[in-house]
Length: 170
Length: 383
Image (cartoon, rainbow over all chains, first blue to last red):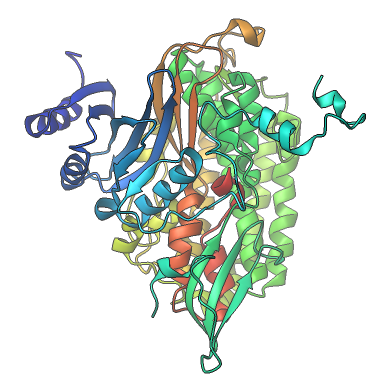
């Protein structure tokens, strides 16, 4: 940590002077910051002001054991040349979070739409969360850890009573 | 002009007798669209609004990877984009390497970059072929696809596969060393590619300029707002390239330029790719000159997959592939398989927000030019 490049630590210091966050320097050009869901939007706006204008991706990690979804926002700064990841956790039963569309506009819109479809996270304030990839999908959000696609396909597509299809059940 | 967001499948309102607008479907069975469609709301010849219709290639790779060990995922990562399989191999391998902390041998790093650049060259040749077809320049299409086959010959020679290298670039290095006589063959290939670029120069200038100049202009602020990366962003004047800004492998040791244009139209995007091919040739020449000796994988022996665990941690790895910024977020909890893999493909942004934005207000005849100037690949958008 002592010989860590100055630039990365400066960004962490700037963020932690304004927000209550856990900052971590990972390696050159990579920093990670964890925050709570209430201060997410303010932090995102602050980060964009620091130069993190490219929202590279939004990802969700499902933690059914502890009952949370972990959201990660991966931001790149063209001027600072640093990748900042903002992490926050939300409740798994009632997965609602404010949308970052006001901050990053079109790119945030489409990333949130995808995460809504695959994990069932509600992004409040995003106007268009219509299905993207899965046409006429009636099942649960498929990328959740408790969704077993093998069971799902077997139940729906194969008939146990049919002798030729029983092999999928054995 | 109606809002872009308001014309989804569910939101399209039936047209009345008096209205002159009608709906027009570009793709998915269109010969030039790939497995992807765009719904166009058209008034006369003018596109009022566009709505992307993805999902025809959704295979759930991110979920599939949670059930497989890295060496299996390396093979799976080929399929993230059919048109540049080796580049995606590299992104995946780097994510695993960063988690495991393996020191990749120097020679393996050179081979990885060599293959990634040949793959970029090959991908740009496909792009050149399809945009020629879209603009009515059939000679360019046939030539580009013909010359692309020479690159595929090299892929077959080195990896064993023409299109899919079966995870040639794998965690820890590459699967096997370069076969004897590779330098001569690759030098020969570079000569052939340059010969092709020389041949088509005059034709393409006329055809491309007439059909692509001033078409699909993307302004810098829109490009940033909509998440454009790679050649699309560089065509708006932003000098950025992951290979330089967020250097990986051995790119910081290599000498190459980042071509940029200012106009942001389809023609500028064509020029960028043309110049990038020259830069790729330059990089490959440098690599061939400096190729070090040594082993090509760490550890050299491939261990039975079940015994290897990925250490706990999370990484976000970015690469510059032919289409733009490719990235993988990988989270591990110390098991053999990754806990979560998120794949960020450049075309997810280029084919949905950027394409919808550019098509709005364009002419029907310009749709193919805009469409292919973005060099789209439905596979890495749907995943």
